[in-house]
Amino acid sequence: MIDRRWRDSVERGLEPVGRALVRVGISADALTVFGLFAAIVTALLIANGNLLLAVFGLIATGIPDILDGSVARQSGTASERGAFFDSVFDRIADAVILGGVAWHLSSQGSQLPILVFAVLALTMLVSYERAKAEALGLSARGGIMERLERFVLLGIGLALDILVPVLWIMLVLTAITAVHRFVMVWRQATPDRGRRLSRPSRSIRARRARRVSRVSS
Image (cartoon, rainbow, N blue to C red; front, side):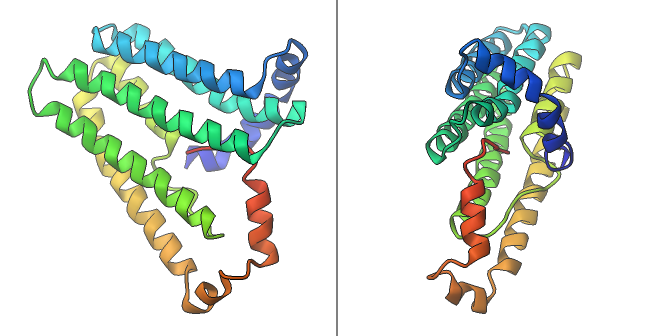
């Protein structure tokens, strides 16, 4: 929801930063790799109970995800390969961070890691729904719990040391988002449209071209 409403505006505002990074030779792929490295460090901080420091690690993980698209456009290197690379690394980063949360909570109860992995499973489902919909030429963006919202909620949970209540909120909201995207795609995939999928329309080809931008949720 926040991603859909504010991401484009934020990225436009950060275009000067993207141009500066291009001038010093930093590539979009390098930012993506740095984001994963920051996620690994964040996960280790969480696992060891350094929750306040982990908040800064979470910020360091999210910033490259906002900047890499700008850098790719400014450097003229935006491509489907780059979008795929970015999306895969984002999913790995999400899994690593939640793995750190599961490790941290395992000392508080053997059942709490199950809650974390339930959140992770729904997170991956939400991402898969969008990826599959776009592969079919449909749209599955939006919902009340995209990647930015997950980071914000998790950051609050880390800062206030209320991870368990926050995880329950994430679980419910991510489940609602998964259902929302399923219904969205189901409504678009009418029988008439389904027959036209074998011959992509101009609008579908346009959507596929736009997927070279480095956006993930």
